Image (cartoon, rainbow, N blue to C red; front, top):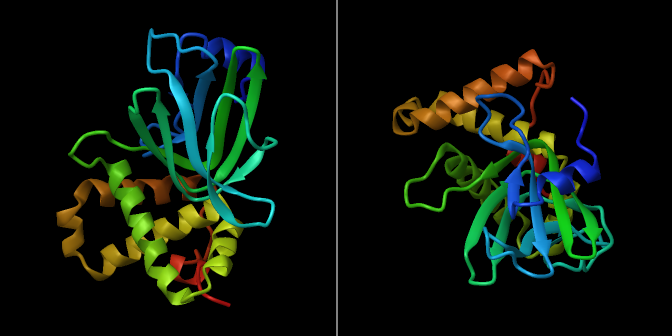
Length: 228
C-alpha cells in the first residue's frame, strides 16, 4: 500500500485533531503511526491539540523528551525513541500513546502544522480509563523491562540514553515479544493472569513469522540493553 501524500494527509485531517494510521494487521495491538494537527487557532469543534510531547533523539545522539507546538522547535524529520507520547489541548485534556521508536515528520501550512509519527513497530494507543487494555499492558511491560535494565548501567545515564537512541524499533519490539513469551513459558501461571496479553503476544509472533520478519534467534531485551 502506498503511503498517503502530504496533501492527502492534510485533507484527511481537515476536521480532525488527531488520528491513527491503520493497523499492520487486524489483530495487531497497535498502529502504523499517529497524526496530530496543531492549529494556530483552536476550532472548538473537536479535540484541539496544542502540544505533542515525545522522546526524540537529539543532535548528541541522546534520548530527550521534547514538546512540539504549532511552530516546530526542531528541524524535521527527527528520530523518535522508545517511550510515551502525550498529546494535550488548551484545557489539559491528555491522550497517551506508546512508541517503540520511529520518525517524526511535519507538514506545515500557515494555519496548522501536521505532525506525523511513523514506525515499523506498532504504535500503541493507551486507554484513558481505569481498566488497562492489552496495549496498556504491553506498554507497561516494556517500560518495566527498560527500567530493570537501566539499573544495570549504574550512574552512566548518558550512555544508557545513547543505547536507547540506537535501538531499531522492530529490533526492540521483537526483543520485547521474545522476552515476554519466554517469561510466559517459564511461568505458565502468567497465561491465566494475563490471557489477553499472552494471546496477543503469540499472535504477533505468528504474524511476524509469516511475514518473514521474525529472526531465527531473537535478541532478548536484557541483551539489547546490556552495558558495554
